Amino acid sequence: LSDATMSAGARVSMGLDGTLEAALDAAAPAMRGLRFVLLTFGNAAFSELLRNFCAHARRAGAAHVVGAVDVGAFELLRESGSPCYKTPLALATGYSLDGANSHSSGSWKAFAAMRTGEVARVVATGLDVLHIDTDVVLLRDPAPFCMCTAAARAEFGDASRFPCSALRAADVAVSSDNMGPSRSVAGGAAYHGAGTFNSGLLLFRATAAGRRFAAQWHRNVASPERGSRFWGKTSDQQVFNAMVRRERQWPGVGGRRGEWIMRRLHEDWDGNLSLGALPLPLFMNGHGYFVQAAHRSLQVSPFAVHATY
Image 1 (cartoon, helix red, strand yellow):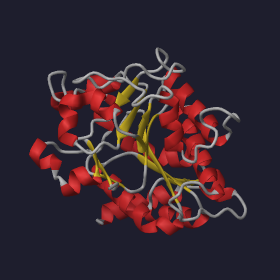
Image 2 (cartoon, rainbow, N blue to C red):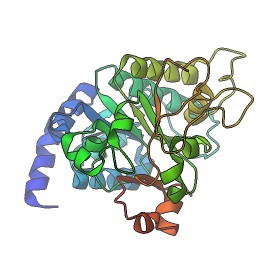
Image 3 (cartoon, one colour):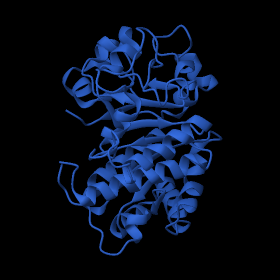
Image 4 (cartoon, rainbow, N blue to C red):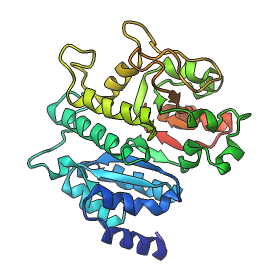
């Protein structure tokens, strides 16, 4: 890192006192007037992923905040000058996130409840939030595209393959676990909806509907009503999919080829929420990027690569 970058990091670290408000203040200069921030979470056991995430976010110039799940992660991130704060779990006595990938342990459920609550909390401040897993690598700042700025419209205008105006109309937008970035170009929302929605790249707008959905997502994860379709779900991703898809049918959500907004959501949200698709060629999974090298065949420059598959 350059001396200028190091001194900037030192200035940021001096203002980080563990509160969310201080972390958002530290991230504000990178927002460049846009009410948009990336939000991720991690503990000290994932220090290498956290360092990698923050390094790429800084390189891309993306406004980001990391919610530290333990004090060790907070100290690590603060020392590096990354905007960070202590989540409620970092302030809790005796909490430890286990490393199981079943997403069914008590500690994992506590983590899922915490992070959905923190996402809802930041959205409630009036910021658009891209909730993002720490195993996502940022290659470009997604803020101009997500906010459909004038600069973004030069690349992603209405005549382009991925018009940013379509996404700008969404209250919530989500990535897909489908495996074919090339198929998604023509398939649009129809193709994305046929795959599991991945909450590791999940955009919430600070619209009334976006705030309401984020708050309900948290409630359905943290305290699902017994006997509801959310009772027994073990991850926030499962809950998200159950919220938007119609029951006892697949995919349970509609979409038209060439469009980027879903249709025929679950009855709870149909007509009350605009759900968009984060275009797979721009928000790629690991297989699409590393194995298929779809960004080369499609001649696109992705914003993010999620290290799935």
